Each structure stands twice: as C-alpha cells, then as structure tokens.
Length: 379
Image (cartoon, rainbow, N blue to C red):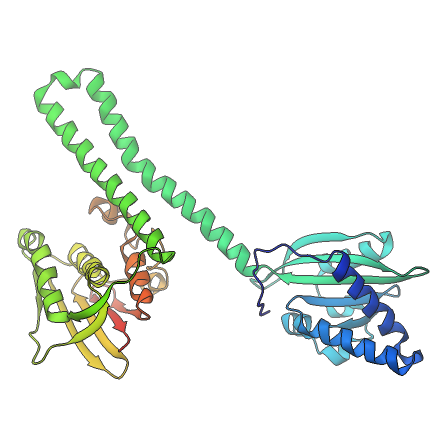
C-alpha cells in the first residue's frame, strides 16, 4: 500500500481522527434517512477517508462492513463495492485479524497489534477501536498502517550492527591476543616479538581501514561529503589508477590495461569520488582474479551517457549472490575476502558514489569466467 507519510511516525487515531471516524460511522448507518445536508457531510467525510494512506474499515455491531477506503481494498485486494455489507470474517482470510475484530466488538475496547500477513512480506500495524455516540455503540473502526518498509529497515539496522560488531571484533581479538602473549614473556624473544608485532600492525591497519570506510560511507550516504564537479578526462583517470595498482599487479604477475582513446572521453564528475569508485572495482578485479590473469578498463559514450567498464578473468559471482553484492559487508567468498584484507564495503561505497552522480552500476558475471562491472554516468 503506497504511503506518502513517514513510516517511522506513530499512528495517531486519537481525538481528531477518532471523532472523524465516529462521524463517518454514524452517517454511514443513517445517511439514507437524513437530509440533503447530512448526505453532503457524509460525502465530504468519505472523500477525506479516501485520501488517507492508511487502510480504514468500519464494522457495525452485527459484524458487517459499513465502509472501507481504497487504501485497504488495494492492500488486501478486496472488491470495494462488494465488500460493503458483508461480514468482516468473509473478507479477511486471516484468523488473527478476525480474532482482533471479534475481541474489540465483544469487549468494546481498543486493541493494537503488529501483524505479518500470511504468504506475504507485508506487515501491518492494526488498531481496532470501539466507536460510541452519546446514546449508542456503533461498532468498531480498524486502521491498518503498512509498516513493511519500517520492519525491513529495522532488520537491516540489526544486521548492520551485528556485522560491524563482528568485523571490529575479529582484528581486535587478534591484537589483544598477541599483546597478551608479548606481555607473558614473548617480548623477550626477538624472533617471535617481531613476528607478533607485525601481526598486530597488520590487524591494526585492517581495523583502521574498516573504520575509515564506515565513516566515508556514512558521509556519502548522508550527502555530507559534497560533490566537487569538474570535467574529468577518463584516460587520465585510468592512468592514475594503473600507477596506484602497479606494485601489487607486478607482484602477482598480472596485467591491468586499457585501450587508448581516439578522442578524449570526458564526464562531469567529482574526480576523487570517481577515482575511488573505479579503484574499488579494480581492487576487486585484482584480488579475485586467477593467477596471471588480466584486468581491462575501458570507457565509451552512448545515448545513456558515459560508461566505464572494469573486467576481469577471475572466479566470477554466482547468480544467487549478484543481487546482494552491493550490501554492506556482503562477501561472496568470506574466508578469501578477509584473507585478502577486504572490509566488505568497497562495492557498497562504489554504488553510493555513482548514485550521488545520478548514475548507476551494473554487473555481469559467470562462475570461473570473470566479472564485468559497468558504471553509467549521465551526460
């Protein structure tokens, strides 16, 4: 159910809203007997009800539906016209929802729950409240607020906290362990002392890299890191990236290359951001390539804008992983990623950097046949 409201805001069916529903319920049951002015008032209230993002249903004391709005009909795939006049338990094929209505009608008291629909990913916050006039008990009004996105955000936040904790704990445990070993006497052994200190240094650098990536990603996502746009020559960008990776490429006996351009390929972008985005892709291509494998960079213009490709001959990515590789800390090969020093944030950072430019990133891959990442920047 589409909603223009902030899903994090609490449901507010208190005095003004409750009064509105009470008016609607009363008029819905009496409109045929009232004057023209009452009918006009009913139509006005129905129009307000229809404009609401939340789903609303009013049932009388006989358990029959007096009215419901389009938001609810759309969310539960009801035929709105056919639903009015039917029993609510004929509409909702959900035992828990029907029990909420029954309890609220019988006890004449409000009830509120979060409920995940059967055979669906949708989650609703449902509040059912009794409606009274000065002299009568009219029935109940139910408000359904779609909190599916809110729940997904909560799940992502929980996973993120768990992942960060794990990623921080791994190097810290190693550092603390070797410090304790040194304190217990290994510091007197020159050979082991140097080895342990090197391990501590390596793990400290991993920790520092992880924290730097987290802080940078946070700044990019919140747009606190401003774009400094300029005309970027892609060939010059590629040359700088090749210089950066030359030592590791030489050590691994690999090749990183790009075809020289017949004419300059230019794009308006933040040079530092774009360099980091492409460097992250080249870094992955080098890490997960086969022995003595090749990495190619190329760029060209088409009607979509400027496209930058980074291709390798590496291990590839399974189809099941392709949809998740841009998630924070998601690793296709966890043990190899940590061994190679990856933080698990590189692709996520690249994706956000390109999106900050109004562009997008695409990926094609096959197991043991290599991977091609394409950055698409608008003209």
